Length: 421
Image (cartoon, rainbow, N blue to C red; front, side, top):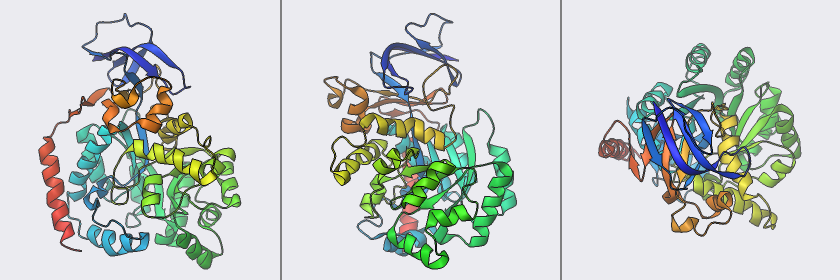
């Protein structure tokens, strides 16, 4: 199957240069990128009308099925939000709930040009089933301490296969929710497999204080002392790293995955991304869950990632717009282990989005990459292609299930969970 994306502006994200030309996709990979395609007759031609093709955004930290709690616990501090509303609702999950809720989250990802999510949530098989049926690329982050280490090992080998929509990484929820024995066991498994590890770190000041009281160390320093990041990996949120922790990130290859929308809404803090960037720490962006955000919207995250740095440093030049765009594409792809889906070039996976440059917010044309960050919204996403298949085009979904049924199932589950508060 050959799909030709014809007459486009192309931003590969290998640099900030835009070229004019065509992209051909054969099955699930890019087979041509250049001025003019004159190869084998394509099965389908999409006329791009000089709109922009670029790599899809990668959501490097997400709890997709948490769409069930969107606006269920607004305007609450983190502890009350988590312990008084979220945890009690989650305790009432039934079989298939996460499967149906994940499908709703995936629809929202598609509208935002997100072509992959790093999903940290319960019941990985249900997330996988929903992702495969929808044609969505998901990296599962195994963090449940109820799953035996032997199962994590088995799934790691089962799902990390070439050309699969699903891949699998190791982690814990957080230091403060995980027993020391479990932290050490996951660290030992990661060492055995040569695998990176991932977790929430330094999201709030109270989290740090608690860890210091328990172990005499800040969270990242404690995890490193347990061998947790021996093979690198990623830390989510990272609002309050010490200079020592920043050096550990650089030394060990630990990505900082920022989640500005969730962090400011819960008043958790603002990650000093400029400081991390200057220190040489690698950066990525995630949305967190819709329960705290409340949307799975990469445009909002990119905008906040930039402007919050400008206001917190009192420097309008801080956190360049193209750097943020690179975080949301290349940086996020790399922390998720999706190095075959980071940029547009021949041989890479065809996870491609089209930005509608005829949208008023994209006119007149000056600096397209930066304008995506500062003026972009979901309205400018004209197409979302994943693994060579167009799943969203001109605000219409192309998935193998009625959209109304996905909404209906999610509402039914949400109504039931909401009665348990």
